[in-house]
Image (cartoon, rainbow, N blue to C red):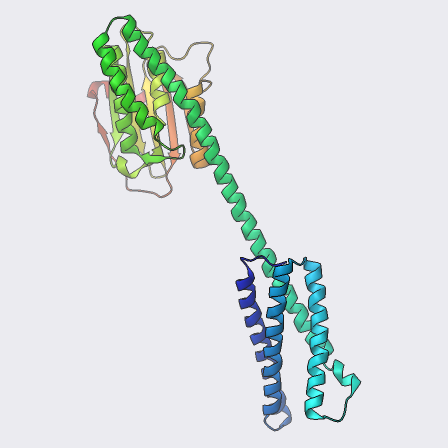
Length: 368
């Protein structure tokens, strides 16, 4: 019936319960003394104390025994009532022998049987309720631990899906440089790619990193792409202040930037502009990647790609339904925006614009 982790708690409850019973019996004796002007019941008080001590010791032994035998609730209750009956008869017999050694009254053996049985029954009920409550808490804790473990496994699966996807696209970029005989750029890209891959693969699946760290990694990633595309890739940064206090999943922006390069920069002869924007509101963080390219192909709906689906799934795993990814086709370009809830309202954060003022003004209406 009892588990090893709960026996100490049950023994504490057992002691407190019988102390309360002793207080009730003592109070009852004192009230009778005052009401009927009887002599001070010293002898009865000693008897009540002895009975309480015996009940506490007996029930403690019973708890320990049932813990070892793993009794069911029904068996525990029946065992308690049997032990209580034997204790009541034995204690009454002992009192008779002490008070009247030569006289034995059988009916007196069952004196106050109903009240004492009730005390044991209430004790057993409290023990069972306490045990059930402890079991429910343990089951809830185990369920939470299992849910967390499943989330960790799913996050690991998502990251294992993302890393090969990114590596494949990066190697394609490297092959493009080699085919165009840009060997110096290919060598530089290989070194930077190795550094970036080492960073990306060393991140645990459940890692939350400061936004500053994420943006630094993304600048390194874009530096790789800048080697390939040169002036065709034009970057504009609009970053909120105090990014070191904001936490985001590691590499959450990389698929958004990869899509912008794939669909906006690569197909266009003159390349495209990419805006990376961060806005920290009182209740949520918004991260947007916007381009002025041709947008997604007609046969590909927003959010169907591996990268965007991966971002959405990771956000859901980390932050629940309150976080997510929204995409929209613009009149001249495409935007992907991440929104992450902030647990506590912070101070308003101003934006520091690091790109072209004129370009920022021209794109202000396109960025949420």
